[in-house]
Image (cartoon, rainbow, N blue to C red; front, top):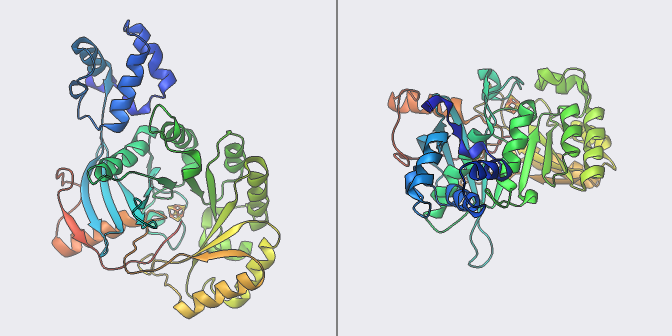
Length: 386
Ligand code: SF4
């Protein structure tokens, strides 16, 4: 069998691997052994899975690949709480993955959230988003989504920590790559694969209504975040040009249906952009829209490097929050500590490319250093959302 024809092992759900073991004449428990080693021990090759008989290792190597993402760049925030990675896929496609860590009380391990990309580039064209301006390159396969998590899991394991949460908020619109996104969720949450609890996963969408309804019917207990950014259609269509005929009212209704079907509360992401959607009057309009919806609002001051759109002053952010809270809307402001670098909407690749080209004259694409090759300390970057 040629190398091109090999099936990526990280694409297979356990129930898809088990028949292969039967075909190989192996007892059922061998599938569990393979999966445990592949998902939790980061073997570089099947040869490294020494608990398997040599003949089985050879047959697996002939049929399957264990492709891992290659780390091209790494950037760590000043306090070490956020790590941005630029990862290269097999075909050279560059995508971003971010690890965000939050201390937990006592001696417990930090909460470690991985923000994954589901597409290279994005077709949604949000005006404040560098990825949106980059345009759409291609969908990522499920195995390319999960290898982002596996790469971070390996980094964490080396320091005795583990992945606690995964958010689908990196580059791209997850629900525009629906089948691969759902397969990735099932791989990440399957007890015999990565084994993360479903409630520890959140998908963020710009608001594809039919896909939200479909997601609600998947029988999953994952969280949903919808990017709203505006309380009325005129403003939203200016900020999210591909919003098309979907109205803000449609989004609120979809959120209610999702909650009714899954029991999971929906978060509305609201990127605060100076002079665009940050006035107190706009906050009052937003409060009226969301009144009684039972949703949560996450206010995210926009990244000032994105598309020439600026972040409002702190007092404007707090005033906006005050109006919402005063109207009884459940609401938080994403913390803008210097130690935090968020990557909620996948704007890192462009920023990183510019940064590295500007700062060092190194172009990203032809470089292929080994894992963990280079550490950079970034200056504080505000949080960002899709
Ligand atoms: S904000 Fe999110 S949905 Fe909008 S263009 Fe950027 S990556 Fe795409």
